[in-house]
Amino acid sequence: MTNRFSLTMRIMHWAMAALLISMLAAGLLMVRSLEPWQLSLLTIHKGFGVVAAVLVVVRLVIRLAFSVPPLPQGLSRLQASVAKLSHGLLYALMVLMPISGYLMQYLAGRPVEVFGLFRLPAALSVDIEGYAIFREMHGWLAIVLIALVIMHVGAALHHHFIRKDDVLKSML
Amino acid sequence: MKKYLGALLALPMLVFAQQSERVTAQQFVDLQQGQNAHEGFRRAHAKGICVTGEFRSNGSLTDYSNAAVFNKGAHPFVGRFSIAGNNPSAPDLKAPVRSLALSFATSAAQQWRIAMNTPPVMAVSDPHTFYQQIKAIQSGTIAEFFAEHPESADFIAWKDNYQPSGSFAAEQYHSINAFYLTKDNGDKQPVRWAMRPTVNVANTSFDGDDALQNELTERLTSGPVIFDWVFTLATSEDDENDPAVGWPESREQIVAGQIAINDWQKQLNGDCHEINYDPLVLPDGIEATRDPILRARSAAYAESYRRRAVEVFNGAFEEQQND
Image (tube, each protein chain N blue to C red):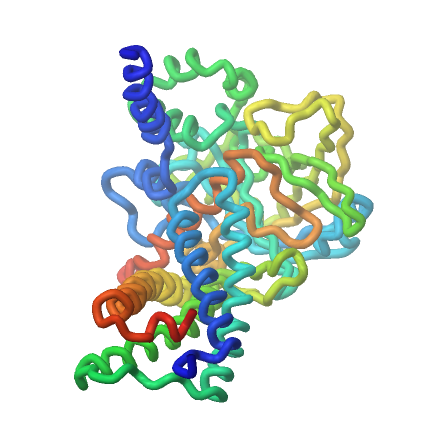
């Protein structure tokens, strides 16, 4: 099939899909739970957050370097714009989530530990109002990202089962 | 057949009953803050005073831990004395528990928050039972609660002997939970620690709501307030994961140095107010145990911090700062 994303892009897509969904689920659990695994999950979440930040940079470079399959025939103008906008938003959120996550930790004076290998710097003097901005941003962006992911999956299934085009297959 | 059907029906009920005892961080902080939250203040230990000073390390823990704080020399900190409760203007002398918190920012990547209380142990061993304990205190049924919880024995023994002193400087403050001191070679030593006072103050002539704060600020005009930082080393007979059980007094103790408190600031003017003294912010060389109450603290502190951060951002203190 010619109408397919490059192998690099497909690997990136599915790796980040698994990562993002795990991170969102971990995030929702760890802000509520008082169980002993909460600390471990929090530490893993932060480590993988750094991984996600690196991956999204690589992914943006790949996205600009490779051509992508065109949108399928027969979409209305509105549908095409929504498709483009939602993809743009997904990329924007993939960038903003790790940035807001790191900045909330930075401003609260909490060095982020990355898999026991090294720690990212944190402010020596805490800024509670700055923390408030990025903590709330991180939480709200997570909710927007969850909504976008649901939309994205819904659209892929719609293309595959209702429109019966090659959109979903182009990413498999 | 009926028996199995009954068991099948009972199982989800049992699971549900188990689940309903599980408290979330939000429920915990709701309980701590009570009906009328004091906006911008900590939900627990709301009333306090900022202090600054230094830890004068004698280097004796470098065999056990890589933490830079234990290197011989002076390490500055931002600290806070406080009293238990959610009311930022509560009377100092009525509070059952007094606290000392310290924050070491040794470098941008190595920071350590310490939160210590006057009791050496918790009355219970997990956060969900702790929640029930706070409810029992609030509803005046704590005697019945203790009667149903034999694990409270060590806490009650301490409580029956404890005489509140007349000064923040004369209390002994405990880590309560145990931590590991760790070395790069993988060595792990479970420890608890305490700040041991160097003065004896049975009573204070200060009275009024701010008696302890006024006593402290008066005391600091004539010199620093000093504590010995004493570490107790567990042996294989001690359970570092149970915060309700004390360790025998015969356990080896190491004095790591002294902390010297030199100065103070009103809590809304000092650096301590913006700090979340989450005891799970740990540097290299110190690790958390599996103690369920220690492990619950990050999520609960984060929820309290998140609430007051938003309130501060929304101007909770703008009026106070104008007078």
